[in-house]
Amino acid sequence: MKNQIRTNYFIIYIVLLISLVGCNSKIYKNKKDTSTSIIDATLKPFSIKGNVSKVKDSIDKIVLIYTSNGEIIKDTCDIKNGKYFFSGKIRDARYASLKAIKINNNTDDKNKYKKVDEKWLFIEPAKMKTFSGDVFSDLTLTGSPGYIAFIEWQEALRPINDSMNKFLWEFLNARKAFDLSKTKEDSLLLAKLSIKSSNALEQSFDFNLQYANTHSQSPILMYILNNFPPPMFEKSDTYDVEKERLFNQASLALQNSELGEQIGNQVAVRLGKQGPDFSLPDMNGNPIKLSSTRGKYVLLEFWASWCSPCRAESPNLVKAYNEYKNDFTVFSVSIDVQSARQKWLDAIEKDGTNLWPQVFNQVGGTSDASLLYGKIGNIPANFLLDREGKIIAKDLRGLQLEEKLKEVIENKN
Image 1 (tube, rainbow, N blue to C red):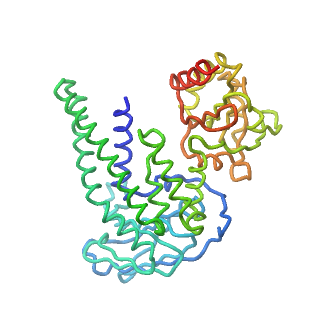
Image 2 (cartoon, helix red, strand yellow):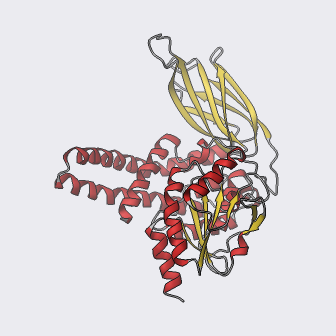
Image 3 (spheres, rainbow, N blue to C red):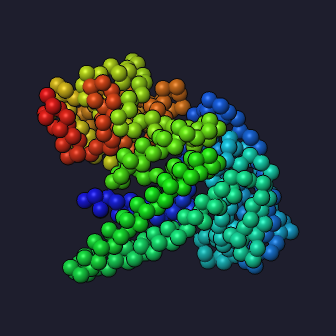
């Protein structure tokens, strides 16, 4: 089972790695983030002057994609005399994508624009210049010291990436063959490649840990830490400890960068840590604190009325609550938008989950629980807190929740 989980994550991770060159997957989350830094959250100007006059492919437009205060910015510029220019405002250094686009003049084709090439960059508040050779992605950028560190990291990681790419395609082809044949031979090959792919993924995490240790003050440190594995990975607890250590050793400027704040929230909610307290309005609009549930084991659950996997988990939560309610409760935090409040209330009634505290999150506010618990990006997400409010488990589902409650309540009472 563990190998299967690791393999599934391997596929997701590698696809992102191929397309994003190891970037933060949350770059595609089109959501406004109003969190602020204790040092400086001011948006600062940047500019990029580009030259593609040497590129052999025909290019009509350049698209620049980046994030600013958590919001995706897509800026398009026409090429004039082989040159293009972008300007904007960002808080600090970050990933950005430059896409070379050709206008499709084929009237029978519904796609008006065609991507010719793409290059990932590391931009910062500065005046920068780019120059492409015969190929658009054969691009150099000047004016961004962080980009130099980014390129060095990617070059060092390239052999491992190449190995993972190889395993990815071998695994995908083997899975496709097994889906068609269902033979024992193909099943054995799939299992073999599953183990190899998991080992390759673990090797990449180990490399990033080693690289972060030797580049602890690098301007891209937070991006390296952001490539550490999620809770579902087998050695995630070990990486969580290392992530916290490296974060605490980093400069204040890195810690308080936009991504640094996210990493800081993540390390603050690892296993064994005290769960941050907060107060949010319940179904009747009355404020209720998470700490009001102290004395019982508490499952802090992040969900939304529109989230099908969240709603599918409701019967499991009701069952666990009814079985252990003397020693256990749930504290559900909805991340629905304010305009969906009635849908939230309807979902609670339909699912029968009004047995425990149900609160409505205040996105961007001082009590934004999604930020306090690591900037929740994917739901359902949950944290099991002990009687004193310490985090003892994460992301428990179905039987996993029952087994954990049996372990901590029945076996220790």
